[in-house]
Image 1: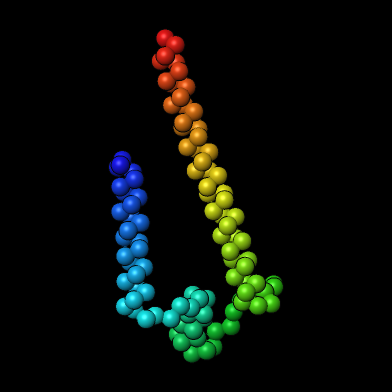
Image 2 (image 1 turned 90 degrees about the horizontal axis):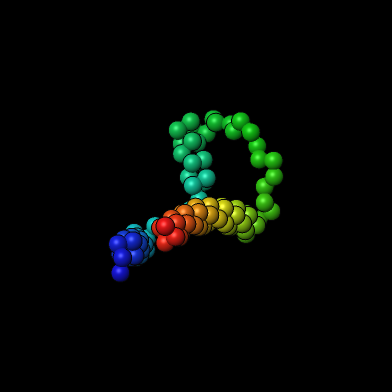
Length: 105
């Protein structure tokens, strides 16, 4: 196994251990950060804060909101994956070109 594979495996194991620890021992409730931020602002201002702008459109349900978030995350992952693949392919092409140049000299 190469150094990269070992590093990826170690990081993966650390994430799994952290996830299991948090899942088993914290008993925390999962909630959106939007709600927590709004509650904190109301707590600090005593409920006097008025938002500057209102949403243009709100999804009709939480499921639709989740769907839109997943679509947005998927598009972002596709874009990131494309550029990672593009640059890896570009580097691989350069390496192969150098090797071919050395063979033909």
